[in-house]
Image 1 (cartoon, helix red, strand yellow):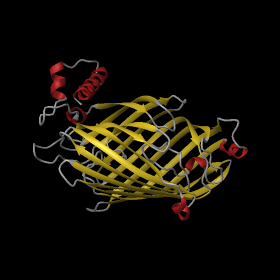
Image 2 (cartoon, rainbow, N blue to C red; image 1 turned 60 degrees about the vertical axis):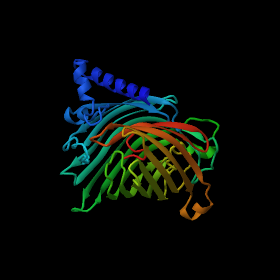
Image 3 (tube, rainbow, N blue to C red; image 1 turned 120 degrees about the vertical axis):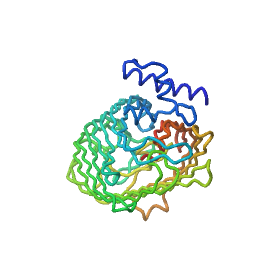
Image 4 (cartoon, rainbow, N blue to C red; image 1 turned 90 degrees about the vertical axis):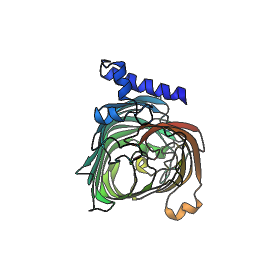
Length: 385
């Protein structure tokens, strides 16, 4: 742990020094990145008081696209006091965050984009949006109108996409309502000549517009690395577009996370996600099990159910140990879910509290699924914001 902490600190400061031309005095850096509460490395003052960038090395280990890397820069827009006196809870009103990133992987996948999380009007309005250009090589394992293949068939998707969401808080409640817009413009091509003829349908131009309603309940104590509270998000989207022929389909997506802290050192998280589609769903849009240790898109169907539990142990206030396990099922309908095979995955990880004021932890997870091992760099919760 001490060696890793030293490496994290040196890498972080060196990256920032490079961004600013290395003009700061060593003592200034030491003060800037030292938490007066425990005397350890902390990036709160840089991220909030100095409005700094957080350089994030993007190390991609997602089995669906292979190993790769890149870089992301996150910029935190201060919304209030950066901390609190010793012994008191910090103000966890979320800051707005802007990000730019680019990455590539060993199978030829390339992606770049811009994103923004906007916390507006005293945290009564939240915006999430982004735009990305992509050239992605993936594997389709069948499902719906296609035969299921153990090894799947490779295909490429090249184009751009955007995601836009705006929600409003209902009075003093914890309920948020709003809308969502998704647009994809791309072309797909089959990478393998020896696939069954039915898979020739993977070739074509894609145009997909999705619009829908968002309803969420959020009582988490922190949006980055929660320790208490409930997050329940439900999306109902209607999609229109064309891919070899015109299509339209409906998608219902539910994400639910509970966070409990039964003792001062332990935090337990529970996750229940469900995804359902009906209509003429293109192959690339079929829901899939989303779990650490399982390649995205590996198990797809019109109906998907995923559960997971995670435990986080506070070692010394800065370092945390994590263990997680879960199971998912994918079927052609919810009526066939009982007969679907359970796909188990689990693993362990570690976290470091890189910003006390933000309650932001970063770290790494190692997971094992039905087919392979994988590891993931995490910024915040392993389940996303």
